[in-house]
Length: 323
Image (cartoon, rainbow, N blue to C red; front, side, top):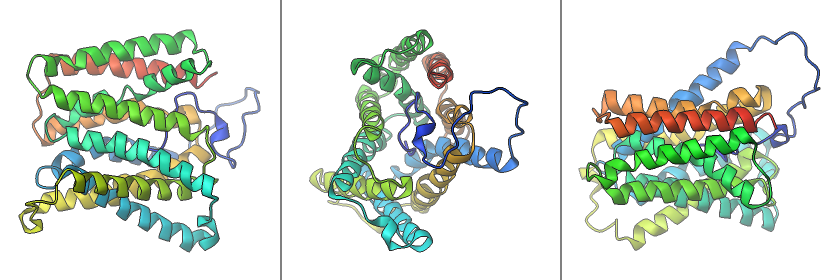
């Protein structure tokens, strides 16, 4: 879970520089190669982060590693913003800073942190599929606040929740730790609440500045939780495998910086309906990488539940984006 807030019904208002649709029909525009390249980065890199997390927690403590990842990425991103736009770009009001911190806690401590902890006991592909239900939770939250979903959105939610039920069967049958499955479900809910809240509270105007503060706040909170859990006791950096350090570096540089930059650029330049397809491509990439590289088993609940979840998310994205 490394993406910014993923609201399946987000509109072009997301970016002040994005040109609004004219409402007229004309010849289809050719999508530039740069867009496909950036989209490929989001597809593959964000899909691979679940594999990266699984490798990290092989020999690194879950919350401490997550905290190191996000604090490092946040500090680097702040430096990049200050370098490219000047130090003034980092100035925010107290309310904006508090809002970014709250969103960071929901997305990165509650959302990503719980997924990292869960991946110490469940396969990375299963975690990705459980997280893929986030757009359905967002639609549910919107409905609870009076934004009635479309028929397609409602159907997509029902499909997503059905797939979620199928995906929990490995935990109920004892094939994987049910506690890990529960952690991911709670983490996905936290991510959905953070995604839902981000567009409704006073956030910094720049998505890069907002993301930097979110990552630092969420990362510091993860470090704090790791210390409270006692993850530092008995931790020997020399015992950490080289591939765990490499995976952590990959998550910092590619998962939290390169892919986010690509996404931020895409939402300003590409059709939002095209950008939104990452929501149902990422879990497919994660499952494939988990099976190919970590030899994770593709049981029938994972395959069937995954197909149902991806179908539901696809329906939500395709119908809610048109509203």
